[in-house]
Image (cartoon, rainbow, N blue to C red; front, side):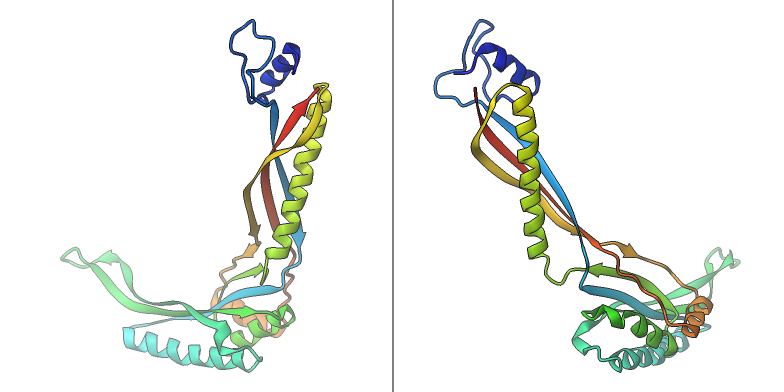
Length: 245
């Protein structure tokens, strides 16, 4: 049985799962267990093994058909250039197809906005398992007429192993915290009563530039440098320990 002074310390720390039945109680109610609930967390930096790059083309023309036709022609050239780098068709997906009017700042006499042309765009997402090909794929697309590089996201093809390592470290973190608090309270840390996963996820860094056509074409002069960095795997757990004297 815990002494009342230990109960007071634990209650003040928000760690006690039982409360005294009245101010004069010297022990917890029969059948209850004194325990400590702690949260543990961990973060791992892991090298990515997969990347998704968004490449596309956008053109403006006085009429919708002309804008779309020019985009279609260039989009086909981009796809051919990407495939020529050994990228499977299954790794290429259309992520956006858009055709929209452009308006003049001033309105017509009847108050309606004046259409002065149309902008068409086509953006594809390319998934690369070989990160070493990323720069040359971007260069090939730009060489074929791409004038949009809308983002590169690095990720893990299979994050199960990394997530499990992060969860194990989160458990270790929870145990270290519980041991320190129990020691400060003059109590013994007992066995685990309950464990709950409070979230485990991968947070990849995403680089999202938006290049103008002139900037994009200038990139062809030199091979595009790409650094994948790392992705962050985060895990959180809650662990309840039995406490004893």
